[in-house]
Image 1 (cartoon, each protein chain N blue to C red):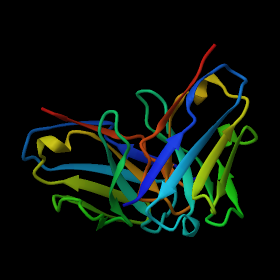
Image 2: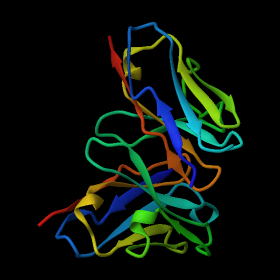
Image 3: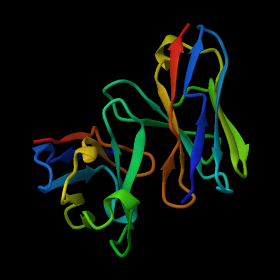
Length: 112
Length: 106
């Protein structure tokens, strides 16, 4: 059974940093591109970033470029999202996902 | 960047109705569209991938079709467990979600 378990969320002040993790199991993690998707309260789904299966390439939505960094450790079957210079508009539930499988999400609240 | 225009934003249906949601891409997405169901407080669940392929466990009352820029998703014989929000996702070039459709009971 595929499992994706996010962690690392919480309340953080504007301008500070937070690092999310996503532990994967039940599939060959190193074979899959991985993504982070977020959902602001009462809003729709928004793609944030993608990393290629071997970590060779990364892609970001414009609003997080230069602030967020997606990375992975295939030996640990873990996906990461380093979030710097956080803004109030980054407040959302963050999901890690393959194409077909999603984690349960982790809440990030950016507020003073 | 590819944009996805999903409509309608909300839909009211009676049990047993057929409902249809559409997504139009800003360019040809070569049938690389998936459909997701999301219930309050839960993660999205993929129902359909590659336009019309039902994911394992998806009931046969769900269906998808389309090509080029225009795609649709239907639920025949709406059941109470289908009350949720639905999203399309293009994955031809990175990912872009549609704005979502909230399905409610009439």
